[in-house]
Every structure is written in structure tokens, then in C-alpha cells.
Length: 303
Image 1 (cartoon, one colour):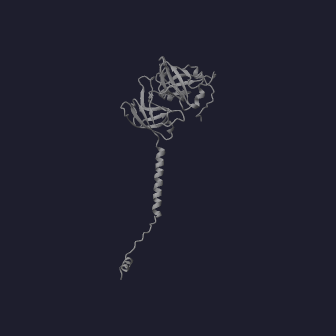
Image 2 (cartoon, rainbow, N blue to C red):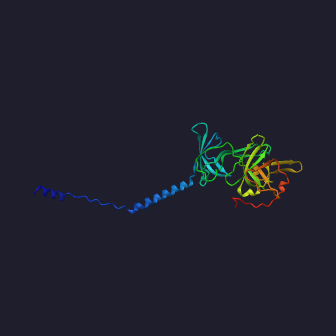
Image 3 (cartoon, rainbow, N blue to C red):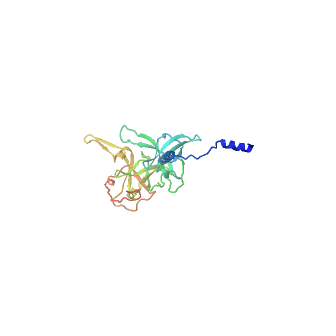
């Protein structure tokens, strides 16, 4: 037997491995696909529930802590997640999360400021002003502004500027601020129709300008003859024969300082325009309470 024949005989005796592709069982594919789909659904749900994160820099954030709220028009639109010193060690960075649906507030021009909620019982003997928790208020920027995630807070609520949400911003002139503060209600027939936004001194420091916003659906109530006066608090009167009497404009007014308004039946002139200035008096004239004009409510936001 030659060498070639021996090699051929040896090759026949050596087994040859055959490689076959293993089929993937559908029993494994279905659970994997289902798990991936479930993971995506959970991720999408978390993404929808998580709001936009923003940072607001304050000179002093005293009273703010994780869990404090950001409010706009009395509605919570954000929650503070972290409060820490800024890198410059001269200011404070407040990291907050806007609630889902409030992402549109994170735009250029939005202004934030610190508010201390107050409940005034100044007219009740023996009780002083009660101080509530602090929160952050805001004024939205104009529509179609670019998105912004970092803001610098202002010291006080802006006065005399457009509200940006369709409200009618007016200015009330007075010789003093009294117990009014941002967030206090503006009332018509004991119904809240607006909000006190802020106050500042006039340029010559002889008077105080108090800015208020009238809700869009109530702007038709305001005319050039509309009168404004201070209200709120609880008035207590005790007489020897009449007994004890307690007076308050409304429950909301009793629990905080407020501004009330009335419009005469015979209205002269046009409806009020943004920036119009009115006098704020300390006491109501009895005749104003008798006014009962028929005014069709309208404007954006009416139901």
C-alpha cells in the first residue's frame, strides 16, 4: 500500500464534525419581546409623570426647603427638590420640578420671586399677624419665547407690567401698603375676581403703587368709575345693649387682607385698560354697596 493510499484510508476513519445552525425557540422570543415592551411602557409612564427641572437663583432663600411649592394664580405648578449654596457662595440655587403640563412656564421672561403667605387678624384684639410657609410665585413670560432652565429671582412681585396670561393689570394708589401682600384676593360681591400682585413706592416716595390682576373673565366689571377699598380682617363691635357683633366681608376676606371693588349702575366712559390707575381708599362708602349694575361677563377664560 502506497503512502497516498494509507492517507486516504486514514481520512476515512477520522469522523468529520458537521455544524448545524440551531433554531431559536419561540418560547424564548415571546417573553423577551414582552419584557422589552413592558420596560418601554414603564419608561414612557415615568417620563410623562416627571416635569421639567429648572434652577432659580436667589440672594436669600430663607424659609424655602425641599417640598416647598411654586404657585401661579393660586395653583401649584412646581415643587422644590433641592436648595443649596451657589458656587459663588454669595447666593442660593433652588432646584425645582415643574408639574406635568406646566412646562410652558420655563421660558425666557418668566419672573420668580419669594412670597410669604400671611393670614391677618389685625382687627382682633390680642392676636398678631400669623406667618405661614413661604413659596415661590411667578409671572409667565410672553408667548413664543424660547425655553429656559436657569432663572434669577427678582426681589418683589413686578408692578405695572402686563401679566402675560390675559389678566387685566391695574395700579391702585394709596398713601400706605398696610397689611396687603402678594396673593391677597380682590373681591367683587365677596367673589374672588383678581389677585394682588405686588407693590412699590412711587419715584418721589410719596405714595405706594399696588398692582392687581383682574381675572380675564371678570375684566368687564372694571370701568373708569369703579371704586376700590381695603377690606378683610374681622371687625368686632361690643355694645352694652346690642351685644357682641362680628363683621367680615367673606370667609376669605376674614382670613386675609383683601381689596374690594364696586362699579356704579350708570357707568361713564370706557372699560378699564391695562395700566389704568385707581385710588385705593381705607373705608367703603355706604352708597357703593348699593350699586347693582348688570354687567355681562366675558373675556378669555369665561365658562
